[in-house]
Amino acid sequence: MQRVYSHENMMILSSAKNLLELNGIDCFVKNEYHASGGHVGLNAVPVELWVYDDQSADNAISIIEKELNQIGDLPDWQCRHCSEWNASTFETCWKCQATPQ
Ligand SMILES: [Zn+2]
Image (cartoon, rainbow, N blue to C red; front, top):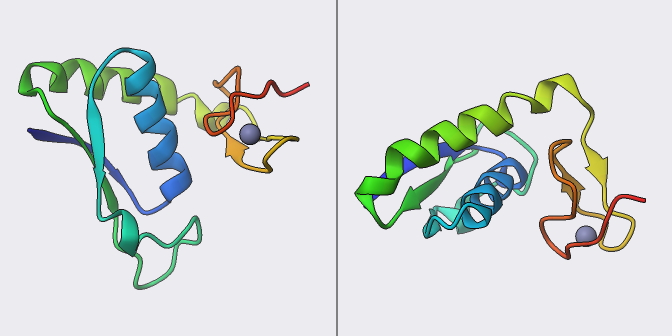
């Protein structure tokens, strides 16, 4: 197992996890219960994303970097169905699979 990503914002980490799952990479989240729920504070503990298969780690990291680096360029969108925020690169809600429009 290998850590491929960490972030204090659970929303962003969930986005990364969703990305890997869409690409068929088995992964899991560590420190989920210590997460700040999207509000980054002084005591926030970074949530970690791990892959089960070390062989997938390099691929996983490149997928995350490629996709999440684009987030800053476009605004996130909020799901009209479940109110979750989604990265601009997502065509459907990571939580409920609803479409933006
Ligand atoms: Zn949704």
